[in-house]
Length: 323
Image (cartoon, rainbow, N blue to C red; front, top):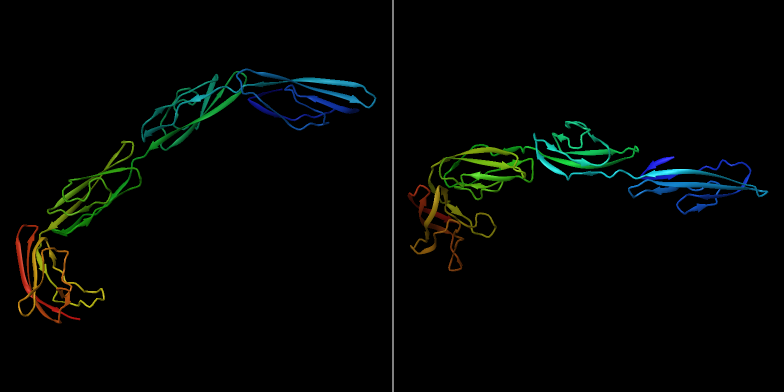
C-alpha cells in the first residue's frame, strides 16, 4: 500500500492455528500482540520511504510461518503561496503559488483561471483562497492566502441649520468604518478639522464640507452642511434672582444674543455704591459684597458689550434680590 506525508495503519492477523505472533513494522518498532495497536508513520523529508511490515507466527508445536508486505510513504509536495494582500474594492490582484505539478484554487468565484499558478482575482469582499497542489504520485498539499478588500465607506452628517451669530453648533459626521480620517473645511469657526464631530461657530453663512478617506486611500466620500447665521443682538439681564444657596438661580449673569465681549457689568445699591463689577461674561453676582450677604432690595445695573458685528450695546435696569 501507499500513502502521502503521514499515515496511521491498522493491521489484522488472519493466521490460523498460531500460538504466538511477532510483528515488526519496518521503523525499528515491534509488537507481540495478536492484533497490534494502530501504527503511525510520518515522512517529513523530500524522498519516498519504504517500510516492510513483517509478521512471524508460531504454532503450538513450534511450526513457523511468516509474511512480508511493503508500505510506501511519499513526501507531501512542498507548496508556497504569496503573502496576504489588500486591494481596493473593484480592483484585482495576482496571486502566486509554486510546487507540485498541477494546482487548483478554491473558491473559483472571481478567479480568471483556477488551475493557474498565478491567477488574477477580483473579489467583492475579503476572501481567503486555498491552493491545492498535486505531484506525480497523487499526493497533495494545501496553503491559503487572504485578500482583504477595502470597501467604500458610507457617510452620514449633520443637517443644515440656522443659528444666531455667536452661537455654537455641534457638527457630526459618522462613517460605518472606524479607521477613516476626516477633513473639514473651511477651518474658520471650527474647533477642529480632523475630527468627526467639530464644534462650529461661524460668524457668517457658511457651508462646511467634510471629506472622509479610508485607511488605504482607496475612496474619498464627501458630505456638507450649510449653517445660516442670523445677525441678532441683544443684552438680557434677569429682573430678579434668589441667592439663597439652593443651587437654583443663585447667581445673576449677563445673557443675550451676538455678544462677543462684555466690557462692563456693574451693580449698584440704593446709595449708589458699586457692589459688583466684571468684564467676564462667565462671571456673575452672587449677592455678596466684600464677603457679606447683601439685603433683599432693588439694585441698579449698567451693561456695556461689544457684538460680533463690532457694535456697542448698552443697557440699564433694575434687579430684585430675593431670598
